[in-house]
Image (cartoon, helix red, strand yellow):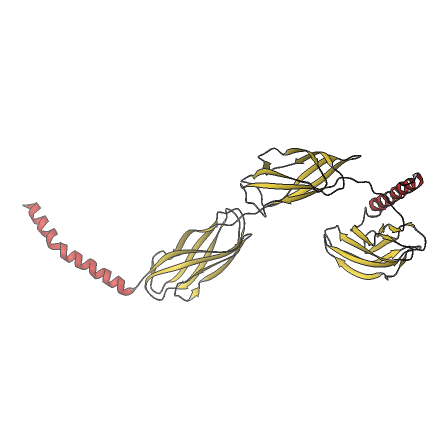
Length: 388
């Protein structure tokens, strides 16, 4: 059984830790590109003059790189055995790094707050106190804490139906009561099932699964959409509101096809210089990128072209030029290669090209003359009978 003096001491120590951390976290980090997103002290409780470690996680919260010049641990009571980290370098957007400091605890028991100090070029420097417990018992309030696991499709296409599954697990040390879960959909996404659920309670380590049915507009723009989730619940002595979010990525595919094929001249004779135009259209919902077209006709000239990007509902001409130095009927392939968000694609279409030779012209002329000679007697006889 703990004495009243001990309980009061534990309460004031806990209150002191909370006040110091809350004050420094909200003020010291407000205008900096660098945030301290976590720390771990090992061991959690030290004996006087023990050696321990502090592992801190530093994160860049801005869209540009942060130039970290120096990181060190400052305290007049806790002795840092690790020298400062000088010229740490650039930390990219949303990237994190872990740094480890070795320290020696003071001789006297108590709660100490050595400051982690981060010097950042062209940004506000960071000061973050870290509590070090030297042989002091601290009672922590037992509260519920709900972890939300989100299961969503890797991507959807415009007009798709999809499901969002949530698994709620109470990772705290006491029961969570009166849990309200509200998921907020905005255009072009809409919910096809109730978007608000009530759960009576969750015991520690207990889980509950929810599923929301949703759809996307057929005209939805491609991109990443964030869907907010708000949890409200209560514990023995507290009420909490927790904000989460899930991301839904809308991707589209390109659909290329041959809209038309034309040539100049329209009627090709042997020896002609030919311009063959193949018009390629995109009937899909996304850009077709790195578009290339080839033909396999056996003529010297330009038989492969690079078109670049063709947007949705757009078309582009692939122009091939060659000398038709041999007559005949040629079946050939038109091959179109392109990329979209789903990968690389190839589209093929067969076509035919007729090149008339001089021999063919002469034979055709002889055939016509033979036909005229063959029918001439019949025509003369018919006219003669008509006159009689």
